[in-house]
Length: 107
Ligand SMILES: [Zn+2]
Image (cartoon, rainbow, N blue to C red; front, side):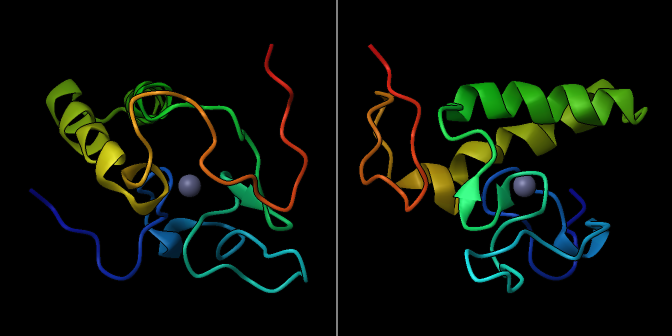
């Protein structure tokens, strides 16, 4: 399995070196060292309610659209739930701790 050099986004697994913006941004506008610009902007997740499973499917679909072979896309996507964003979450979708941004209320 190829291992990308350097840090990867702890939400979707993309190498931060591949991020056109160099990474996500914290609330104060500084670059995040943990998340990419697709996942994290101005200190909040762009998709706060997404689950690890949904992110896995999203990443796999994205890699497939980039013409990755299916087995590679799947293997890469399988790593998603092991990333830091997902690891401290249970199987349920309850946000363990609300971030500084406003979460969408879920009925
Ligand atoms: Zn990301």
